[in-house]
Length: 313
Image 1: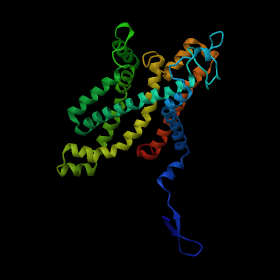
Image 2: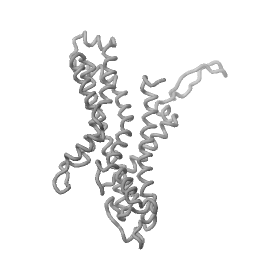
Image 3: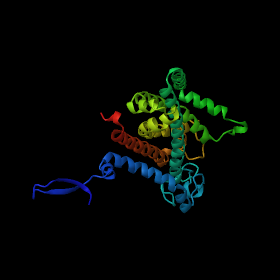
Image 4: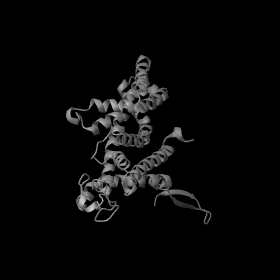
C-alpha cells in the first residue's frame, strides 16, 4: 500500500498513511460532486433522448391528439403513456424536453468552443506581439463589444430569410454563429492579459534568448500555461451561451418550432396560455434549463476555485 510514512506514537516507528489521490480529493468537494451530477443528468438526458423516443414511440414532433387532448381540445397533464402529458398539439412534453437538452448542448458547446478558439488566437497574437498588432486587435475587440446582441441577432435572422418563409442557412448554424460572435471577445481579453504577464517570465525570456521561433515559444511555453485558465473559462461561459440560445428561441429569432428548443417550448406555453391547464408544458423546459445552468455554474465555479490560482481568494 502506497502512502506517507509518519512517526508512530505507539511503537516509535513509522506507520503508513494512505495518500490522498486527486480523484478522492475531487470527490470530497460536495459542490464539485453536486455540479458534476447535475451536468451528468443533463448529458444523459440528451444522449438517451432518441432511445427513449424509440421505446415510447413518441417522436419530438409527432402529434397524438386522440390520446392527449380531451373533448374540449385541452392537453392532458399525464397518463396514456405520456409521462409529463402533452402540449396543445398533442406532442409528448417529456420527449420534447429531452430533445431540448440536445439542442441546448448541441448549440452551446460548439458555439463556446468556436468562441474560445477565435478568442485565444486574437488574444495570443495581441498579447505576444504587442505594438500595432495589439492595438489593432484590441480595437477590433472593442468594436465587437459595441454591437448590441439582440439587435444584431434580429438583423442576421432577417438576412437569413428566403422566399416563402424559408431560411437560407440552417437556423442552428446561424444561432451558433451569433453566439460565438458575441463570446470570443471575453476569451480574447482573458488570454491577452495572461500572455502579457507570462511572456515576461524568465522561462519565456530564456526561450526567446535561445533563438526559439515565435511559434515554438507560443506553443511550448505560453499555451500550456494559459490552457487551464482558458478551459475553466470555457466551462464558465458555456451556461451563459446556453441561456443566450434559449433567449433567442424564446424571442422567436433562434430555433423555430416545431424543433423542441427549451426557449420555444416556454414561449409556446406562454403564448397559448395552456400552461394554466397543463403546467408541465412550462415547468418541464424551465426546470431543464435551470438544472443545466445551475449544474454548469456550480461545476465551473468549483473547478475555478481549485485550479485557477487567480481565484484563490
